[in-house]
Length: 375
Image (cartoon, rainbow, N blue to C red; front, side):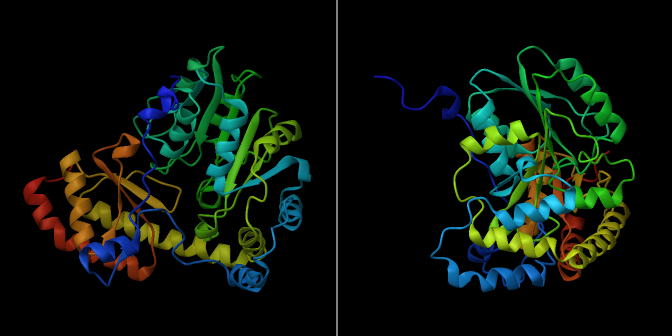
């Protein structure tokens, strides 16, 4: 009998999301819970987005506009593009799945870095790709020179998360130019800019891939992070019209859904809300970095809304994760990202970060007795 499940799917691990608030409440009977695990915008969506989604609830019996005319044209207006250059999906991961479905054949090589977004590894492996991972630099950044040296005739896709999740680091404009000068035409380059809004504000040498377009590059962005509407799943991609036309052939119809389309449009129309989010995040990021350094940790410098640091060992990271859960604080362990001694903390509201600081202050004396600080 012919196999029903391909070998490359049998051992594939499913994506593990941050623990939901409701799950922790059920498990431990807690009422004060701060979720700092999924890099969400804790300040919530724009009131414009909420109003737009509320008004469309009465139309949920109708299919959404398959071509998302209003949202697409708003993006065209902002980025000076044509509709043929834009594709929408259920988050940026949705568009990654289109790319995998359309362009990657079993056995073809996908080239990327270690310690990057695990969701992409799953999508690539899920279509039978050979995933080649290049080690990061000593300061936890994509090593573009090493990636360029690894390109072969079998390489089909290069994946760059910029900024990277879970390290929060980024490749510079100069590094991007260096890489693209060495990428042959047969290789598709995915630039995943899920945290673009944070990085563009924080780093003067961050490359805006909309300024210097390449026919074999697709830029991915999302409304899930800075815009605060992760719950409705809406992402967008920019690329050459031939690239987009072929992606649309494998795209499921009516994605994103009606709520996602109007919510994203409302979010784009409220830039003051986005600026407030970025200001608050910057202030609380600085406060959190100072706290961690004061406590003897060495957090990785990030241009995002999260901070990653070395807890010292697998056991130390696991103990910290579980102990904070007991205090009602959800952070993220990074075993799935091949950083088993590290943890990641998303930036929350003032109250949520105070909760995190209080919980850390409570558990750190025992942590020090058991593990000490990482060198």
